[in-house]
Image: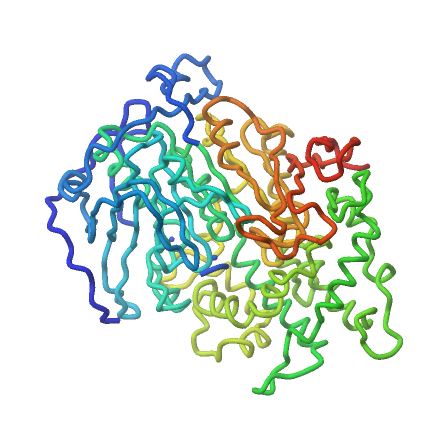
Length: 603
């Protein structure tokens, strides 16, 4: 890789300067990270921002509200915010307007744009150049908060630091709300694809180290730009970004006051292996082959056949919440009522979209029960049957992703040693041995001193006592029709967290299932919601989220979700309830969240 690099700005290096007295201790630089896999709240006095200093011994502090501020420096940040190992490649003022992100034009306020990289090096293992690339946007009108935008997929690209707030079709961004936002490539270039996993340090940067390195650097930039450090800090992401957030909550709980993790792939290596397991199941019932003579995974189940499954799930479970409205609110109860073998007709003749063959039922049942080895030992968690199993996002992850995304990730990043001598793509997926190869995600060897399950997953994920004890808060949400990261896995994590906290972790951590939603958005769901505001209000005002209102994105929405059923109001709203509560119909307008209450699950 000999791509031309931007000419770096010359800076004088000096240690990080002190942070705001109410913030964390002075950061000290350390050298030690699936793209899909990718409010400004009013000011408060300094005393309020330092709230918690008079709390009784042993009681978590009450964190006060952030104070707004104004940008004091931009063009001179290269010298003022110099940090060893960090090079700023661009610092410029950006006028209010819009920035292109993908195919969208996103409104932005006036801000200072800082781009750069940390820890540049040439790998002695694969000879490639590596660095932790980043972009930070510092608004002129600052709300006193720091926002780490944890990106998804395999990372590898510095996505514009807008500060996505989660869900589908959000109507604002953290930058618009006044947050100072950072985004990163997690330490490698996307042009390498999954082959960056051959380099041991790149594995660690991707897993956890990029976040750990960038956080103190970003807080120092904020200190120099605004004359003080952030009063409150938040880390937010979905998918692999949700994993980044959960890892940060466990590894660096002193750095973040609020953690928002969506559809978190916190067991990502296991989920990736489960994807290969799924490919092997689909291949057994594929009805056609590709031009290369390989099984066409998409022919294993047609859209009509998956719609049949979704319709039968609704027939059995839709009314459990008191209203047949196309949403299964009590997904857990549904799993004891819906039975694939008896609720879906078995074909007695040709496949016609109105039945499944016995072989198809076996394959689909195996996938939903969770990947296992030949001895029946679980590799990954089960998936719940839900109404979103016929969504386009569901089909993409189940049938397209295993050879195009998951095979490469497992082959080069998650196995130790990397299985780089094997053919990739679908042949790798179909040839992956669940008995001999799957254990390699837990292995170490030679220069690979940490296993994938070590560097990718939060250590002791149910022990968040340090986060809890400093008064920080955590919200996790997950689409119950997520096809790649199981909401059953997230529910099991939350159950363990509850147990670790005397049976109730709701004082600092809450989990919100999103019925019908696919991976991070989409599906027949009310998938537009603002968990960030709920989190800020909880952290800074002590207002625990008892429910979060979510809306559908039917015709007329700024970003339309084409899978919103035609018989729904385009603006349907529903409450998202903290697990294990579910939304129960209490009477009134069937299209309004006001007609539903969050209550205990159906027995």
